[in-house]
Amino acid sequence: MIGVTWMLVGAVLVLLWAYSRWKHRFWESKGVPTPPVVPFIGHMHNLLHPDKKTNFEGEAYYKHGGSKLCGFYFFHEPLLLVGDPEITSHIYVKDFDHFMDRRSFNMSSEKDRVMANMLTMKTGEEWKKLRSVMSPTFTSGKMKGMFPLVCKKADELVSFCLKEARTKPFVDMKYNFGRFTMDTIASCAFGIECNSLVDEKPEFAEQVESFFKITPGMIWRLLITSLFPKLGKMLNMRLSVPAVDFFADVARETMRARRSGNKRGDFLDLLLEAEVSTGDAEGTTALQDDKSSKSQQPLDELTIISQSVLFLAAGYDTTASTLAFASFLLAKHPEIQHRLRQELSEMVEEHGDITYQGIMEAKYLDACLMETLRLYPPTVLLERKCIKEYKIPGTDVTISPGLMVICPVYHIHRDPKYWPEPEEFRPERFLPENKANITHLTHIPFGIGPRNCIAMRFALMETKVGLAKMLLASDVKLAPGHEEIKTDFGLGLLRPKDGVNLLLTPLKEE
Ligand code: HEM
Image 1 (cartoon, helix red, strand yellow):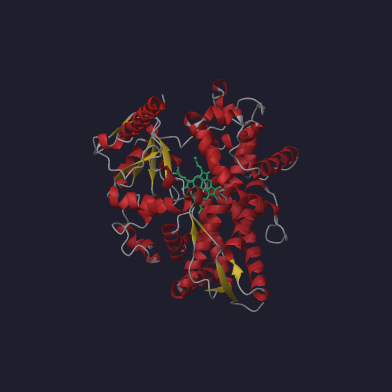
Image 2: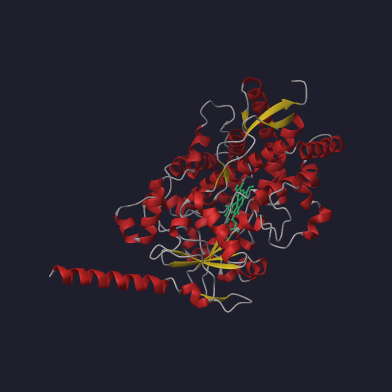
């Protein structure tokens, strides 16, 4: 009897193994190279491990995919890594109607309603409608209107950093830039003064940090809800962090105050004005309602709150990390810092102050930021979901709806095929006279095509003002013992791991 049981167990295992082998032949059958695969789990152990993920994708990109195409498996689910710029231009731009969506998550818990309604999570027509309502926030006219506010916050940042430099052995610029970007986005988008640079315990900035901390619990919840959605629903598993509720309350209160108060012409007003008739916060959103899609989109409370929380989170980390990496690179390369300061001083001399036009025309400032974003793109991967069957141009590979396509931004940005001596910090690559040498779609820190970063103009203005004000006020050097930077790739976001510690020397009498 025991012998029969063991034989049955053995037969089941062999069948399961054969099934797994068959599933893992998907890419082979299409002629797409794949790194060695582990039965049942595929490449999941590498893809979910924050420390291994980027190296693994790099190895796949260069060694197996020849910088073009490479197949992965998340358990048995196939994913496609696309590095070739020509194919990328088809998938992300020309044939965007086949790849409009990003990955979807099974968010069945009531507590995930705010996250589930963010622009980043929306799909198809709903995404299109919401994006067109939100896009006017970032026209150049709106940017000019926000410029004085950004300058005010940058002045506060500079005086805070110089004050710290007098009393501390070094200044943690990642921490301070994070407070600056939090205050700036809260002020520009909502008129909220959260004073993160002044408060001893800045609540906004501390809450927002929890969005970016990966915990084992989070990974488990993600795994369970994606592999066993019914179990996730039964257990009412929440994917969003509790800080979402904190920011949702802030957005709700600000919205109510704004309805009865003055308009500022900011992001919140824009969304409130789109709310031409009252939506139902408890039910489906106006964007889901076909009857309401005639001309003007009435936005319901939930949609407005979700986008507000998204802006606070998205506006905080990406720009703060960019500024922190830029200040680190400039401290490491004093000759580049000197040249940049010279350009900035000439700009101030010509325009009398830091002006919108001056900042936008400063070519070396732009080149330094572009080179920082090449070496340290805050978003290391771009994802799209195939929504209609698609034959990849120039290949015999056809992919079906549901398949995820991944563009490895970080590795493309460091591919020696496109960037000679890719590890070197060389802003000249982006000066107007050299820009023609850059291969199209090999510098993509803000993403690609119609679903790229909606706030790119704002992010560039904010980082340029922050950096310019900082460098005009102070010389920056690496603090002893902090000559190298450690990076963290969790959740596909690249951030400095243990802060960016610099020595600041004021350039003017205080
Ligand atoms: C240096 C700063 C920033 C960088 C490098 C950056 C980068 C990106 C990237 C790579 C994407 C994905 C694009 C794609 O899939 O093709 C994205 C999307 C997005 N970003 Fe940014 N971002 C920055 C700042 C900001 C700021 C300040 C905000 C808000 C105020 C913001 C809001 C968004 C939103 C809402 C999306 C989703 C767009 C959509 O799905 O339609 N980003 N960003």
